[in-house]
Image (cartoon, rainbow, N blue to C red):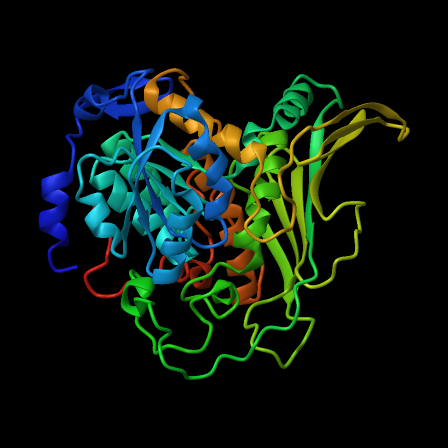
Length: 445
């Protein structure tokens, strides 16, 4: 990263600008807004399990995109995506290892960031510095400070940044949340967000040679350097400590907690209380909690609860994931399959079943909610729509709830929160507000 400053200076756009549809655009970035009939040049950043969820949108001729780069630090992953999409999408994609080379290419208009968690925010602000729009997967940040930085970078560079909490684009979710806001269940006062999965035993990491084709140095990127341990680079990095992952809460609670916050129309909580522990396969390599119960109390006597079970698939609420919203005159159950509306006596009043094929707990996920979310991203870039369904300033607040839960687990105590800026009113909690970066990778705003 010794040339990072020069790269930023060469690629950055100006900061003086205007506002369109509630989003700040710089003068230069406004000039580069793509016309409704113009192609968008897309780069894929990260070719793991999530990348296949983009295939349908990339193949859709109505989206009018060219795929110009397929980037991943593991050779066989980028090659697989290249084979998957060869002859099926427009554009002549170059397979590439180093995302910084992609950022330096001015023909790239947008980046899909589906890297491990520790790369999400740094990869996104580097892309914005280089003048790219970004579709960033959840979690949008590895820690609270990165959420603040993402919002600040977006305001400075005026790029379109959509967080990949795709339920915000689900017609049934939009419909029922609108009804809740209009009073269909009276005053909404509580939401229970939940997730249940049957993840199995996790190998104990052991020293091993770096796998052939893996750029371990670049995989670590912004994170402090450690020696390679067997199968850390693959999906299990989620559970091997805090250097890369954000545990199950960052991995999955983002979706349901976002729906809960959306329904209750709340931002930062006043108080956070967490009970979490590792309850299963006690001697395996999983270093995080696998079971969590978190409570977030908000102004106006509103409350959100998170019930997360990574390795117990009991369908406590009748589904593997979803959100229940309670109001003074009724209740709503909403998930990716649609919603059910109940009156105060528990009678089903109305239901709407989604035609969506969006995956629930399957690794990688994908489906038409994702397709619609991506289309919204493209349409805002083109100016065909004025509002993102999940702009980064909203995504970052929802992500903050996941960080609060993780911090509560790590410090082993409850804490209060400043509802104006979201900062934790506990010195131990604030010690975990940011993270240490590898030398040369520190953010500069």
